[in-house]
Each structure stands twice: as C-alpha cells, then as structure tokens.
Image (cartoon, rainbow, N blue to C red; front, side, top):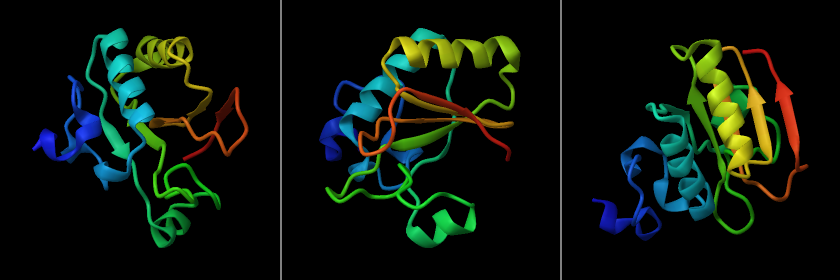
Length: 130
C-alpha cells in the first residue's frame, strides 16, 4: 500500500491509512512527522489531518487552515493526540517539534497541532481551547 503513495517511501512510523487524503499531504510534513516520532520514542496518534471546507467550519477551523488544501492542492497540518502523554510527554513532543524545524505549533487540551504551511505566519506557538 505504501508504494501507491510515493512520498511515503522511507517513512518508518506512519502508514497512509493514518491520514485522510494521504496523497495530498505535503511530503515535508510526513518526513518531519516521522522524524518527530523517532525523536520522541513513543507512538504519535494522528487525530486530524485533511479537512474539507465544510468539516473545517464545523470544527471551528479558521479560513485558510493548514488542514485544508492550499492552492497547489496539498495540505500541511495535522493534529496529534496528547490525551495519554502527560506533561513530560507533551514537553517532549513540543521540544522535539521545535528542534526538527516545525515553525507552527498549537497546544490544546487533548492535541497538538503541527504544520509546515508557509502561507501562514511562521515561528508561532499558540495555546488554544478545545
């Protein structure tokens, strides 16, 4: 199944089935995400990846969300569950994400948002409410 999605070649910790529309996920995102999993040393569970416009509105997503397709037909945002990580696990995810070059990180009560969307403001960290 991975061969069907060429940008998943060499990816060790994730399968295309973990993402909605894996063929439209930016290669840079899946590579950084795989490296993040390696650096953290524990499983990372994707809770949200691609969203169409209706779904994005329904969950309170912003216009131009990194979860939605950009003009080039790719999306670059994912959410990871932090429900069972505890404070130390959350710290490891955020610290390693920063070290790996993620420049857009949102921390919420039950997930961390990561994206590599260069159309949006860079070097930002935000805390949101669920």
